[in-house]
Image 1: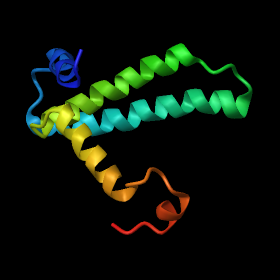
Image 2: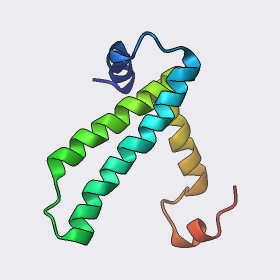
Image 3: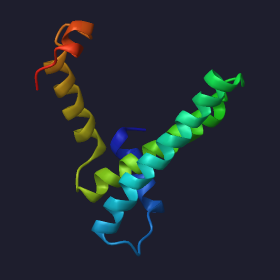
Image 4: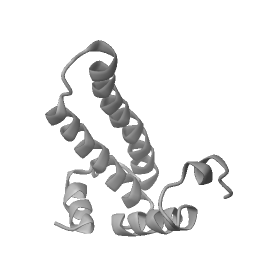
Amino acid sequence: MTINEYQKLAMTTLNPDLNKKDVLINGVMGLCGESGECIDIVKRHLAQGHELDRDNLIKELGDVAWYLAETAFALDVELEEVFIRNIEKLKKRYPEGFSRSKSINRQE
């Protein structure tokens, strides 16, 4: 499955009663909520001594992906375009790969 195929399939489960503004709001709020669920799983592992719940973390990452797809949909952009732009930004920032020095002394 391609990224754009995922987005198209995922959006078949979008609430059809939402307008574009509400889809955008729901998308970014969902990203925050699901990201919080991911960090909670990692927190339990790192700070509370639980085994890392890998399967649950993978499920939550899927929810993050869904809300990312929804947010991109609200902006009328395909996920592939979002990913391409991100890689272009990273290549400019770290043309030789990650560098601690370039991260600390980053110029936008």
